Length: 484
Image (tube, rainbow, N blue to C red; front, side, top):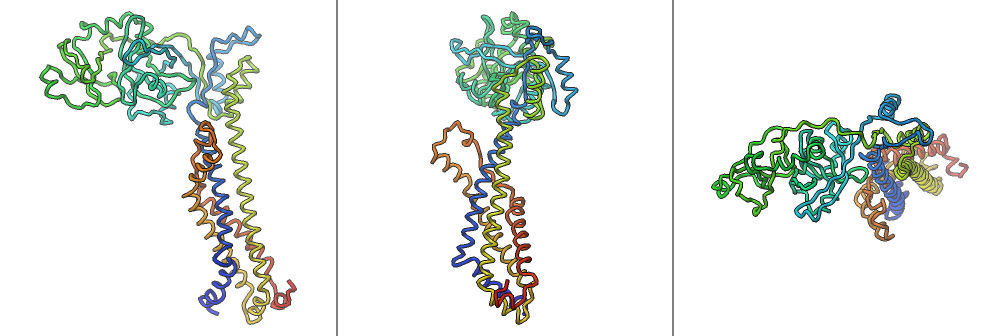
């Protein structure tokens, strides 16, 4: 019998018989696979969320208070030398160690009465925490103008909202004693670690703490020489401004500029008030020609950047045993929980995959063997007329592959289309709190090729092996007289 005739006369009728009326058996298998893929997509999304949380710029940074007096409890003092030594001895666990300086400042938007005191970091662009903000793309602003000679700050989104600013705000005011000073907002980030609200350059710190009495000198007309304004959202001078002797300010390299788009202008006429058109009065901070203060005092903490949360937990045990220092328990517990739930999610996902594969194998084996048992005599007659065993095995192997492949592709497409809908519906139906981590999980279908191997090729291979064992060397008489 020709292959084409075999497929038409035997293959297709057998396939239709196996899948049942209206393809009911395929629909049942699609349902099994769809439920499995939905569950695994949610688990995969959860793993991605946990991975993101574990790898964010905050999870792997640990601060050790340098003011801890170990001698009080009979422990040796922990210092920078020991911190560096721990890093050198554990390079596979620790990326870097650096000093962290924290200061408090009073900021306001327009009204001094609304000023708020906040804590922030003093650092430069070589700092590993600053680099992590860049690498993790935590900036909400399109541009980040922060640099080591900058007189500005980076603020958090929360602080921005508290002061009534927005993502386009170019300047923020700072209060130091009786003086106030507008400083550029270099960028806005989602958040900073340890609930800090700003990052300040060392150069600005040098002015505020080493030379604060010079702020009034900086703001004087004599020092400035000209009056400077920043026009937000403007690229060219209007005819009216030009007629008022206002010109563009020449921008030089490393100048202190805000992140937002706008035009820096100046005028020799100090009576030219541009505030009525939304301009911000600014100053040339470099007229003081201050050197950056390199020695900014003792650090508040020694900060370790670890490679993974597990390395943090190892360090927690080590430093408590050696130096009697208890790191912040809530943060350590969070790191333990993230690690535990990551392992648990992987275990549950593996268990679900195994269960799904076993379900597919049992379902199809029972389906095929039941069909073969019903048609033993017909198969025996065909064998008696010369149909080889290998043709029967190939026939049902092909039916198995088609059945599983069609079901898998259908289930995968449905899960890709409906996965997030199912997850959102589950959250809404169960009235899950908005603070629950499930609200941050994005359905993430597993890799098509990987799941194809797991749900199609692997079960099909096992099923073919079982069919081969069942049908190999069977005789026409075995089938006709149901001896096997």
